[in-house]
Image 1: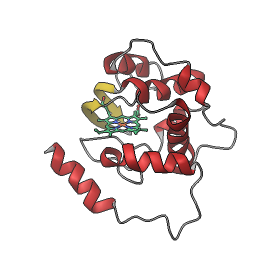
Image 2 (image 1 turned 90 degrees about the vertical axis):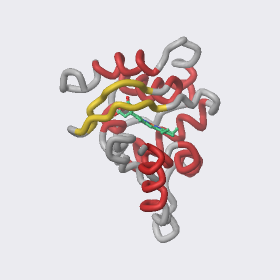
Image 3 (image 1 turned 120 degrees about the horizontal axis):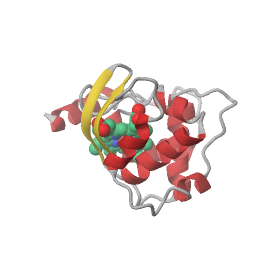
Image 4 (image 1 turned 60 degrees about the vertical axis):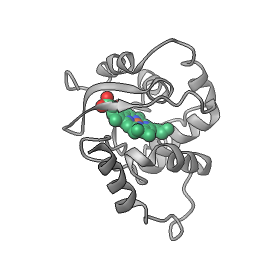
Length: 158
Ligand code: HEC
């Protein structure tokens, strides 16, 4: 099932091309997103029902607060595990961790999500490599990242 979903995401969405669009901001982030994240979240970040959530609204929202920015860094460094609700839909699967990727590339990847996919307003500051570095080495796991996430969204249990 999971494989089929990921495959459908690839087959269904892969033809989306940047070529007719202006170059996306955070080109290094765009490249890393396509290489590391698109297989589950889709090349345009729209998500795959019951496999991986869309990244089009919540990450831009998180980026506006200090704890939200920490949450984004934690999600890519430690993964995310357990049931969550995103835009009213439930997901209960496991996001892998990407701690092998360097701080600057992870920041660029998240900035691509926040600004290119999520259209965060100009008032939101791009994430810096130092914000990723600050969250490294904390011995957290995906369940702890889910606990931290609870404080960020208005709906209880989301
Ligand atoms: C193997 C599939 C997979 C890959 C690859 C993947 N993710 Fe995820 N991602 C998930 C799943 C599944 C969840 C939800 C986890 C859950 O149900 O607890 C998630 C959740 C997230 C969230 C949290 C959304 C929220 O509303 O809290 C963010 C942000 C995110 N992913 C970004 C990324 C980025 C950036 C990458 C690439 C570096 C990536 N993901 C790669 C599967 C994946």
